[in-house]
Length: 274
Image (tube, rainbow, N blue to C red):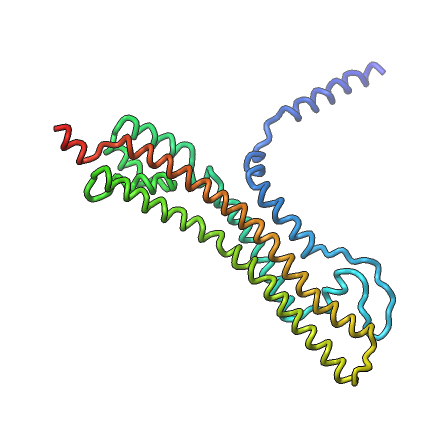
């Protein structure tokens, strides 16, 4: 008993010490939480199909469960939809990482531009903007490098640069919209093809086909529509989320750019003051 008390105290101190230690990387992992939450349902549905207990059947009858149905309906349409699903997963993750605010608008870059513009240090600001890769730096750089240097010219250059920035952000996510719209169409094409095959077999049997076999063909055909919807729903959901984020960031950077530009001296205003 006397020896166990110090051991217990040491274990408690070790636990407390371990809990209070900083854990690096938590911030980075939290920033990708949206991407993980979006991708997880798709992966669970497409890669870990829950196979229900097989119902014993004869003569090629359809077995219960999604996985047996997936194997029996595997064709070129299924391959296209699976490739599109894997590509969509990678695209969603990439958009989630690229459309982060700290990537597009680093706090250090924004603060440096704000300070130099408030001090009206145009020459120093030009030097900083040469190596600044933020979207705010791109807009301000287009304004300060405008040939005329007038207030109206600087504003016009900022508007053009802001439009280009938003178009570039939108192009990254427009592919999700394309995939989301094409997925159900590819699935519908697979369904139509499966129905054609099912009714062709019915015609070859002289209209006396087994209803069980006919239902198997129809189930295989409809499975393509299910795959198309499983591809389209996450893509369109992610497209809406990323589109809203891109619009919010573009609006914010346009407001920042206008504030910075109004602080900078213009050639026409300098001429009037003299």
